[in-house]
Image 1 (cartoon, rainbow, N blue to C red):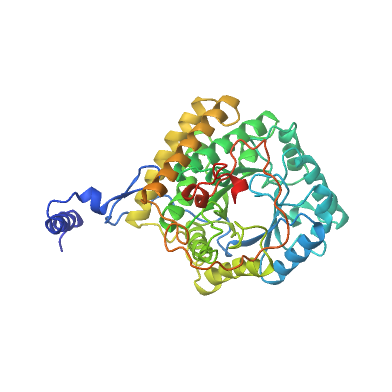
Image 2 (image 1 turned 60 degrees about the vertical axis):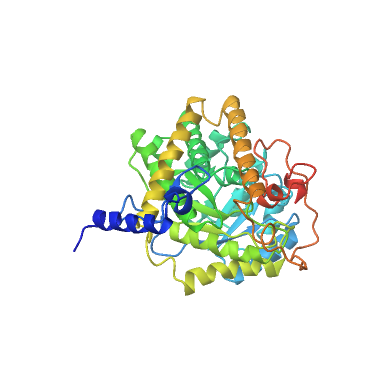
Amino acid sequence: MQDEPDLDRRWRASVERVLKGASFDEVLVSRTADDLRIEPLYPTVSPGPRAFRQRTDRPWRIVQRVDHPEAGPANELALADLEGGADGLNVVFAGAPGSFGFGLRDADALAGAMAGVELDLVSLALDPAPGGARETVEALRSLAAERRLTPDRLDIRFGLDPLSSEDGIAMLARRLYEDGFANGLLRADGARHHEAGATEAEEIAAAVSSALCGLRMLEAAGMPLEAANAALDFRLAVDQDQFLGIAKLRALRQVWAGVETACGLVPRPLRLDARSSRRMMTTRDGETNLLRLTLAGFSAGMGGADALSLLPHSAAAGLPDAFARRLARNLQHILVDECRLAVVGDPAAGSGAFEALTQSLAERATAILNEIEQGGGLGRANAREAWSQRLAVSRARRAAEFAAGSRVLLGVTLFPPAVERPAGILDVVRSDPADADPWPPCRDENLAQPTPNGGGENSS
């Protein structure tokens, strides 16, 4: 039996004869937004570092957003989601990064939104509003105390932002730690950078830089470094590119393991949540979003996400209705129960393509991370400004690809529908985006078809 290098040489020679002088790279090699090569053929390799969920004894958490502005309707939608099989809720407050113009109005609405929800039976993730972290945490603590629920009975992700300008975030996290909440205190959110136009490697680098900022602030607040590390969660976005999506989740684990080792820590299985990309979703031909969401869910499941929130297919048009939420929920049930994607741990391990993509993404993300940290990290104003400029370049490059036709958007630039169907949304008006957000979200649909105000969130 001939060895693989010899077979590869023979295959390459056969391909070049068929190409008849055409460039192998131009015809058969594609490149990612980070300019990483995607080859047409990869050799079999030994598995690299494995990517496992924290809990391999159960599937990932099926998470639904609680983002209706009013507590009553938010509660009705949440209870319907739980009855339909969701086992996680993401409570989003107005103005939070990733709220997209909706969310509970304030912390006082939390109790009403959680009425009838068995907090000790679900996973709860919070997205506090800017400046409202303390009130949100206190509202949840009061609710748990009323129900006589101790920290050991709860799975709560408080979602405190390491990059927040709110005073006392580190001490608030330390207080939670001292009260018995050891996990899920701070969230390193790469998804917000994805929504602002980041490439895959840029998203990883931004998430890790945020996590480093969190480590520093918790250690400065008096928490042991090991405890500070365990208190961190990560969130990434997944879109319709299933190959890069799987590699991105795997690469984040590699990059963070390298950071842990450099800090003298023993690498641990990190908590990694995934949210489907809103950037990829369209208002035109909205049902095509179901295809994108399926691919995004597949990526998260294969990449080892611990929890997954799929935005309903009408999320780009407004606040999704109960039927749109049901479809998003059931997509995950199909992936878990019928496709059984959660049964195998790290199914991409050993694949030449996925191992190569994972490694190249990790290397590129590490290089970008080093640039960010040399500027002081994303906690510094000058680094934030430089990062905003970098994201603007990535958005501009993406828009140019749409204009040139090298990147397409199904239902918008490719096969647009002759007749639009009504979107499944509720009669709730989207609020204005927060002016304080240094990295406001944008959508590909607006980059592909620019609007007079520049394709920002208000143009949705």
